[in-house]
Length: 456
Figure 1 (cartoon, rainbow, N blue to C red):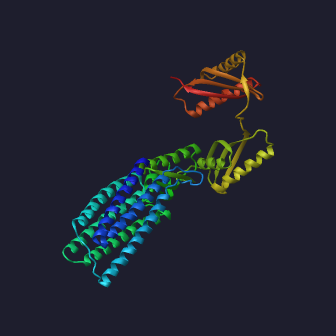
Figure 2: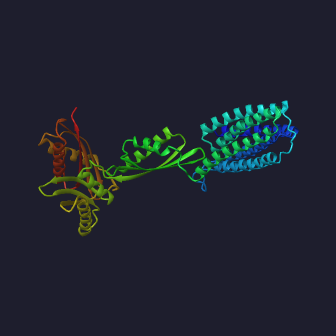
Figure 3: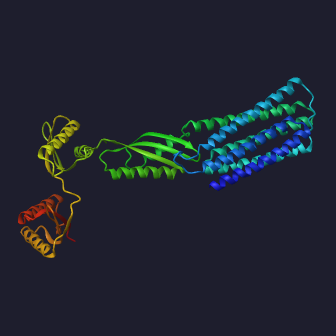
């Protein structure tokens, strides 16, 4: 795509240079101010085309340490320079045309076949160049190429005005040449105004028309987005940089929030090519958020691990009970201060008419070093598990028994089968009872973890 942009820009240089030379020769030979103004216009176009080529090459460079958003706005700077050149040319042409009309000085303007030929050829070349540049500009979203296309498009219409002026001269109306020159200058000014306005809008980070509404619609359809709170967009070269802030459920885990942000960026890239999105999430409480969700959010915001959260609605108050895991090396006083802070935060969120009971237990170490127990020890533990489970008969086929030795004691893992129709609560009670029984059976065992599977 970069090569295509550079190729189109180079061909524009060649076309405008050829037209400049041809118009200048015919303009001086015929004395036509309109054709000479067209030659000046084409000369400006040639300089603008060179600026466009340079801008296109520079804007294609990737972002670096000094230009975090890339070099796309170089095209806008180039377009602004082209606008200044257009107005300069128009001023010169308007001055000369007005002087000729006011002074009524005779000017030997010759409307010959060469004059008609060069203008008609100019219209044809301008038409095809404007089409090629517009097509590539839309494809690559290049503002510099769009500006160049506007130049050639204005050239085509101004050449049409010159052609009408030559027809007037052909029929003996000498002033028609100066009038057509004024028309050319007016068309150039209009083109310059359109180009300058769009360029300044880009340089001042004016949001692309309709972009906010389109982005809001796309983002709002992404699952997990509660609301689109803010959208900002700006163009830089062929890219549109988007900053969007969305509200998400504050009870979601961080992994899910990251998935939502990635989905938003992917949706924008799919529907708005060349878009680079920066997504910010704002955690909010949703209408159907449960009290358990609120308690978990409060604990998570305080970097605390809680589980077994239960909520009971009494006649005049709420009763919340939970298990809080803290570092086992803390003193009871230190752990109690942490629990008090959590309870106060829960009461502050749910209201003063709430009763919070916290059960403090040691946080299980996640990086404890250990080793596999000898096979003889595993056999002994497995036999004890099967013997204890046989008394109840709800837990069957004890298997996959693993015993690991740590500095604090043994950790036992096992699997078992249960009736698939049993409730989770009943299964949990059965497994929990077996875990406690095994710890009572052997003082070497510190922790037991059982995994129940439905019988097939």
